[in-house]
Image 1 (cartoon, rainbow, N blue to C red):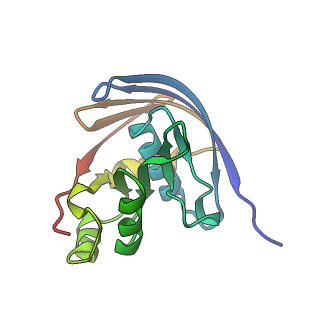
Image 2: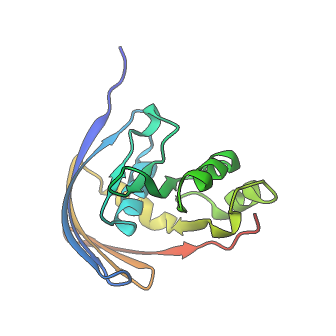
Image 3: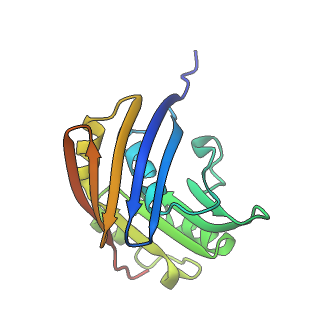
Length: 180
């Protein structure tokens, strides 16, 4: 019997002072059986950090030709391609040809990822935006993850302040310098 996706419901108060985005969101997010909880949390945080009109989660692992998260214009064209984890150079090369902006949020070891990309051929490599999400914060969020979660996220100067119930988690999102 095939495993099915697990649905998570998130009620979120987002206050991103860096970008002047203030929203109350109710998101239903499917977690594929092959997706780790860390990846799910990183995907959710990236969505919130990139929140804009036209943002959407893709069909995920069922459609590897799509970005993990996309910001589309009114015609359906991809304006921003957002990936999670450690996408390879070929995927980033393709993404850079499809979208005007490509951002990657990694919850893995950024040093290893940068080594993996070093010297690879990537279209518009200088325009790539690579970010590392604080791994301790991701782990702490995973420890509090339930099928229904209400939390608030404040973003100030790339610092994340996440409140879940009585717990407060903090961490940074760091833009990575790369030589790709």
